[in-house]
Amino acid sequence: MTKKGKYILIAEDDPFIGKIMETTLAEHGYKVDRVTDGAQALEKIGSNEYDLVLLDLIMPVKDGFEVLSYLKKTTNETPVIVFSNLAQEEDKKEVMSLGAKGYFVKSSMAMNTLVGVVNNFVK
Image 1 (cartoon, rainbow, N blue to C red):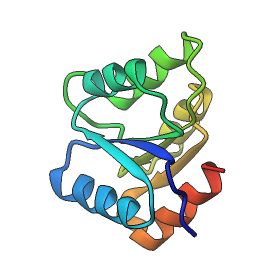
Image 2: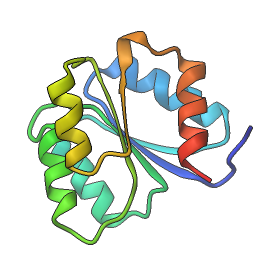
Image 3: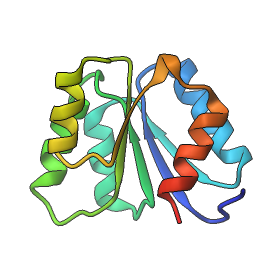
Image 4: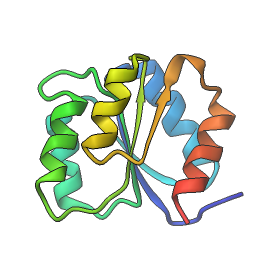
């Protein structure tokens, strides 16, 4: 299923994982921006209209918790899905309370599953 023209931001500091996510989504028709830290993510979110943000939690400068916390205080309504290798229930509860729409563990997710998840959130 292709989503022509839908705009996704990937905030992921691991260059290998970020590139795979970017390439996979682009191959399925998404327009993709990619950043490597939370400060860059907030800058991009503030200056672009994304349909979805894929957010890692452990990143330099500002982590994903800080990004979510900031977004919760603003009028920005861009949906955020967290993709992290933090698999503890406390982390999941915290990000969901900060407004994330989903939480997935990267290390246990195949890239074709990523596309399905994104398709479910981007109508």
